[in-house]
Every structure is written in C-alpha cells, then in structure tokens.
Length: 285
Length: 135
Image 1 (cartoon, chains in turn brown, purple):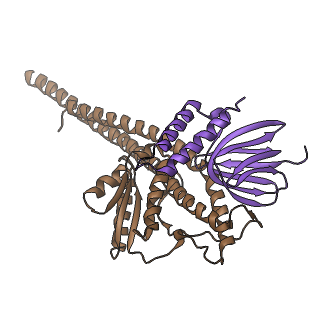
Image 2 (cartoon, one colour):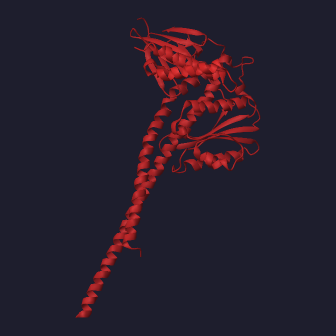
C-alpha cells in the first residue's frame, strides 16, 4: 500500500499538470479567436477574386491562344506537395493525422516523383530525415501568417511550374470548419482550374481578357496558399484547445480517484491504530 | 448629389472599406478611372497609386498597390494586395522603403531583383503621396 505522503505528492503533481493544461487551453482559445477572425476577414477578397476569375475565364473561353501556361495539364511526373503542419505539438492528432495523410499521398503517387515543400516545424522535423526530395521549408511563419510569405512560396512554385520542373502542385492542409470539426484536404493549385460560370456582366475590358487572366491566375494561386495557411492555423488552435480541454478533465478525474484512494488509506491506518490501542488495553486488563 | 454607389476595397488581410460614395478616382493600369454611379461594367488591372473617393462632400485618400477592379453600375469593387487609408500610413517606413528601392535601382548589381525593387518603389511612392493628403 502506498504511503499517505506518496499519495499527496502524486495528487499535487497531477494538479500542477492540470493547471498547465488549463492555461494552454485558455491561450489556445484566445489564439483561435484571432485566427478565426483572420479566416473570416479573408473571405471578401476570396469571393471577389473567384468571381472576377470566372468572369474573365468566361470571356477568354474559346478565344484562340488565350490559354495561360498555368492552366496547362501535363502528365504528373514530378509533383510538388506543399504540406502545412503545425509549429507545435500537444494538439491531439492534428500533426500526426497530417503526416499520415502526407504518407498516404506519397504512396498513392509512388509512380511519380514527389518533391516536398514543408510549412511548419512538425512536418519539417518528421520528413527532414526520411525524404531526400525537399524543395524548401518554411518554419516559424505560421506564428504570424503574412501574405508575403505565402506569396513567396507560391511564386517559387509558379516559376518551377512554368519552367517545366514540376507538373503539378498540391496543397495538403487542414481545413477549419468549426471549433470541433476539421478536415484534411488535398487541393491541386497548379495546373489551376478555372471556376465555371458566366461573366456577371458584359464588361469593358481595360486590358485584353487574356492579359487579365495572366495576372489573375498567379494571384489566385498565392491566395490559395495564404488561405490554406490561415485555415491550418485556426484548425491547429482549435485542435489544441480540444485536446487540452480533454486533458484538463482527465486530470480532474484522476485527482478525484486519487483523493478517494488517499482517504481510504488514511482511514485504514486510523482503524489499524485504534485496533492496536484497543487490543493493547485489553491485554493490560 | 445625384446618385451614389457602393465602393468596396478588399485585401487578403481584411475588408478595408465598404462605403456608399458619390465619386471615386481609381488608379487603373492604363490611367486613372473616374467612377460615378451608373458607370458601364468594367474590369481592369489596378496600378500602385492613390485612390480617392468623395463622401458627403469630403475627399478621402487611400494608397493601393497592385490588384484588380471591377466596376458595376451600382457597385465598384477593388481587390488590392495592400490598401491603407491616409491616416494609417507609416510615413517613416514608407520613406525608408523608397530610399532603399532607389538605392537598389541606382546601382544594379546581379542578384538584385529589379521587378521587386520597382514594385517596392511604386508602393512606397503611393503611400507617401497619399500621406501628404492627410487631414
């Protein structure tokens, strides 16, 4: 039977852990709110960009020689996979699920050469030693997502795609749907896919539609990367918040069990002492 | 005033402006565009520069940089990479960026991305122009 002191120590240690997990939960909740705001404030741009693109695409459809280089579909011999993971752990299955999805992707595309671009420390740490083909990594950027970072990454990918070094670019990230719901997504960003639809109006084009398309498409790719980063950050904080909430209530449960056990041990030792006293007195009579 | 229209300016970071305005001057790639309500539908690239709009007889200034604009009879939407109101501009930073870009362009050495330096130059210039109109 463990001694009372040992049990008290154990309870204190669990309480300390609980305090930490509770603090982490609160921090994540605050960060989640901020990340969520950013996801929402990127929506107007996203919608407008998509609408413009579909108008311009409708205008260029069927026009001879209007196809942009970024739309060209080639056999996918060399693929670039942009994997967006988290910067930190302790977020439940957030990072491990992403890494597993990335491995699945590698298996599915075993026939072609996949080059990894790693955003976030966790994915970088995992794949650095395991895969030789890594085109680049971006660590620490997710602590404060900047458009310029997403832009640089996208520009590099676009250049490689134009040069024919790669035939497709995929984004693998976690989509934030709500605090309790996330989904891992694999999106192809290059070759770009034009949204369907009609032009919203009979526009006057200041520049020829084909030129506009050539300008819009890179922005579209940049923004897709940016949005994926924002979504991923929000999802990571949500995952951490949920995980830490679970850890806090597990700790509470454990404290309750240990306290019960400690009381039982204490009572047993008191009973034992009483018996000793009583039997001692009986022997003296 | 006769008619008004809605002006919306969005960047990847935020919705900068959504306002009902009387008139707007927008820097298109091929020259400034003066927009009034009832303008014919138009799509254009956006240049770096100063965007002004009039609301209740007052003029407002914004520095915008690279993007697109869509004009509809009752609504004009601007997509910009960056957009700031005159009073949000950090003049000191813009001035430094301008000098840095000018220095880079003055002595072109290999390894300097000319397009990027030019871009920075235009952006800084737009910000400074706009800041000079601060009320």
